[in-house]
Image 1 (spheres, rainbow, N blue to C red):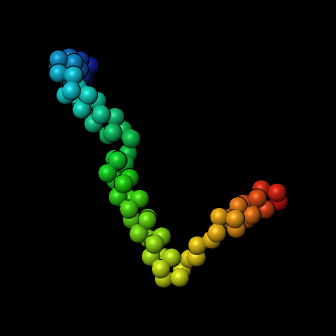
Image 2: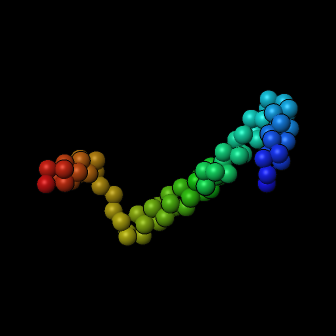
Length: 78
């Protein structure tokens, strides 16, 4: 795409109503950010299900907050 084409597209985009410009801007920025909000949400859903399954199957165990803090403090000190 050459500079003239880009200027034409920009000019046409700037002529859009504010709401449509905002949507276009959001979509353009989102295309640069990699994962979309939906993809991130789906990834978290998958991770949450994995963690629940690990807990229910006994693969992992939950710890009391006091135990977690004690372990964290011990790591910081060493």
